[in-house]
Length: 133
Image (cartoon, rainbow, N blue to C red; front, side, top):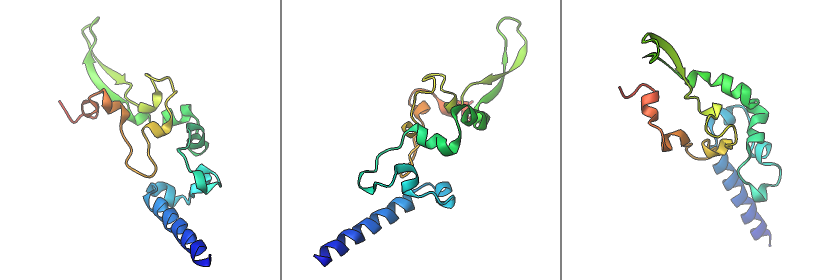
């Protein structure tokens, strides 16, 4: 019986260490533990919702402002006046111009594996980032 308990405890420690090792470096550096986001019940960890993320990352408006640098500023010809004008293109994924703020953070951001760029599923984001002429 003692061997079974020790084995289960060892497995839990290995799983917890593996999860922390896969955690994003900035969360590790900030001392964020699994329970801080997922709760104390370690038997049923699930993806956390946006409300949990925003507890630390601020509300959506603050997040949009903080990531405003992701918008692309370009010079283009105004079709009405013919003048070249500086225009800000809304390429900030947090502004939610498609979903109006209904996407959960975990749809793009993954804590324990590589995140994805959901915008890139439909858009040529390389062009937005100036990598394609």
